[in-house]
Each structure stands twice: as C-alpha cells, then as structure tokens.
Length: 207
View 1 (cartoon, helix red, strand yellow):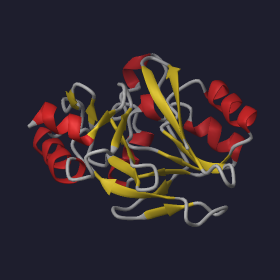
View 2 (cartoon, rainbow, N blue to C red; view 1 turned 90 degrees about the horizontal axis):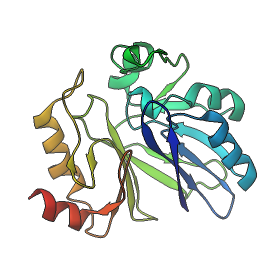
View 3 (cartoon, helix red, strand yellow; view 1 turned 90 degrees about the vertical axis):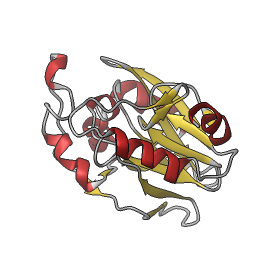
View 4 (spheres, rainbow, N blue to C red; view 1 turned 180 degrees about the vertical axis):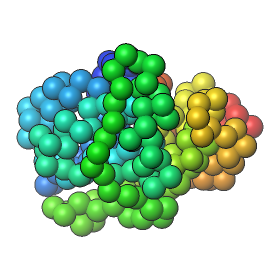
C-alpha cells in the first residue's frame, strides 16, 4: 500500500508511506517538512514505521527526518555518496533557506540492496543507484506494487535538474535510460514534485 502526503516547507514536496497492509508496518520515504503532519498521519492510521528512507540529500526531502527519527525510533537511511549532504547546508541547499538543516544520525544504503521489514520479511524495496541529480541519488523499487520512488531523478514533464552542487546531466540521463526506462512499462514512477507517470509514458516523452 502506497500513500502520498504533500508537505509544504520552502518547497512543496511529496512524502510517501509504503505500508504492508498485513502487519501495518512500513517505510517512510522523503519526509521533507511538517514533521507534525507526517507524525499525525502515521499515528492516526496506526502505522509502524521501521525505516526512514531518503532518495537523496537535498533538504526539501529530509527536513523532517531528524525529528521523526526520534519520535518513531526509526533509523534514517541514505546512499553513502550523499551522506555528506546531510551535514553540509550548502550542499543540501538549506543554507539559503533562512534555516539551515542537518541530520546527525543516519545509516547507509547500497546499490542492489533489498530493504525488508522485520514485521514481514517478504515486504521489501530494492535500492537502485540512480545518480545525476546528486551523486548519491537512489530509486526505491517495489516489484509488489509495480512502483518506483524516484525522488528528483525525473518528473512527469521530463528529467530532473542538474545545476545544483554535484549534479551531472550525463549521469542523470544514463540513470533514466539504463535503470528506469528498463523497468516494466506499467511501473508507476513516483517523484518528489510532480504527479505519477508510467515508464511507458515517460519513455514516449523522453525518447
């Protein structure tokens, strides 16, 4: 079960809950802002969040993560190449927001890793390293749901941005072509700042 919650910080951003309907446990993906709103959604639905997963290290995708880590007793996970973004407001783009944001406690993800629930070992996400927007951008892919959480790798209208520190247009295009457009055509791509789009629709748009 996938639930989306738009949160509003400096930017509006899509936060996602990937929840196992059997155990009611699951993952929280990219909690960008409004920790109270996210926490209330979790508590009102009776969800147990086991892990907080970050697609990349920009503050609009993790602004509420540290507070929620403490409230939920759930560790934060990020790809190693983006871990430095969590402690550097210049890299994570919060330096110019008026309220620099950092995260002190986190664990590392790895390419190809399968993230499983303790409550239900068959409920899982695959980590796909998809650099370009940042060096450590990842996509979380659910075979069960036929969905991929792509962060800011791409949007409904096309590729993500690459003009921020660490961005690389060639790498982003390679990630999209070789790792996203090779997923099944009906895979739903869930981004941080736009509506869902299927792989087939995205392929027609880009190629």
